[in-house]
Image (cartoon, one colour):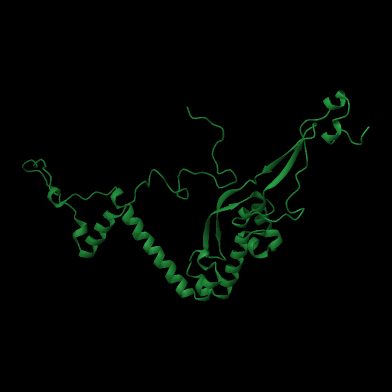
Length: 267
């Protein structure tokens, strides 16, 4: 009789039918944490903060000797973090519960990035954040600008911060102009042509008080130009697609699941 016949299906091929039927057909190997056997971090984990979590595998063996390898995806979700060391808010950063618990143990987001060693952080994004944090400590005047941290992500960008700021602001302004032109035809603000500015209206009754129109945009040429420019801008879909960071918007909850009821059908 082979040793440990109840563990490996290949040993059950030449044994009795009774032993084969008593074998558990869904035996699985234990899932070993990726850090335990020094597995190289995945590319996805380098663009987020996954902590000790990563893609993992387990093997399912059957009594016939066949085995199947299953892939496990780590639980991760997007969350916003405010960083005092970076003087900005980092939006939609993908994190795992392991990273969030480590942040609580470290005393906050900044302490987690600054004090966690690379072998525990396991993230290229976290390493870049740490470089920018230390660079901000040496250059507090640049930190006071409040620019996104990715503006100074590269070493080349940190060599000339004034030029980097100029490039960022110019691209931001050009993007705003381009978006305004792209969505101008979808603007909910409608200014009719000059010929239709005075439509037919019913005359007031004799002796009634006629209200005066408040043409506030005619007070100054600058105000008129600003008002006409605002009418040309597009702010479409503001109510249909509200920002989830605004109060009473469509997204609720700031925890692991994002909030809301699960498995509820709408009649």
